[in-house]
Length: 112
Length: 117
Image (cartoon, rainbow over all chains, first blue to last red; front, side):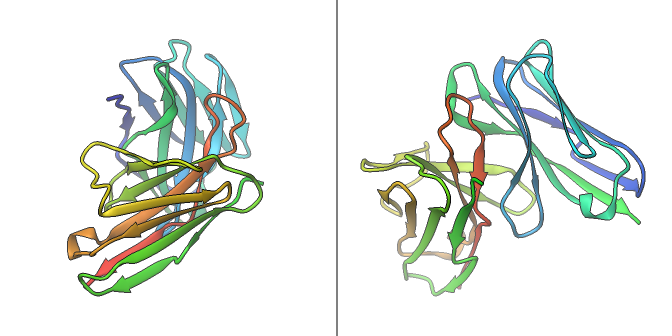
């Protein structure tokens, strides 16, 4: 099946620093989604991307749909302690707008 | 908008008993809901797709007789773990799409932590 390679697996940063994580795929995706999951809770949608090259912001978060449609990145600026959690990329590939494929997640730790 | 409610948030049951988990879309109708399972420090694994008014579609390796899914209305899907065993202990999460067209994002419930003793 489809696979998404998400990196890095984990990050330890200081409060105030910027963060970048990305997802790549060997196949084309039509939609890229970024979710955040807090411990013991379900994932929450952060940003949805629908067009190649699209750059979308949500507060301090910015995500881009890669031009090749095979990658996406998420940036967090001026991190704060509540940014701690697991960030997942997810996407719908060309063959299936029906099943969502998830990356393995990036665990973010922010030191105050 | 697009709120998905899941109940219970946690449950402890004895081995051999059955447990039912409910998933409701509160402010939208969902013809399709999805059930995921998540092990500690791992990503979400799709178990099955719940279709309103018809049989669920199970992913390869998921036992349909063990994980019974019922989607009786446009706002409610249930997952019943039958004859639960300790290896069924996990975090189960449901999700639904708002059906705004291809590629619509999934919105997730808060998950149910199942512990089988």
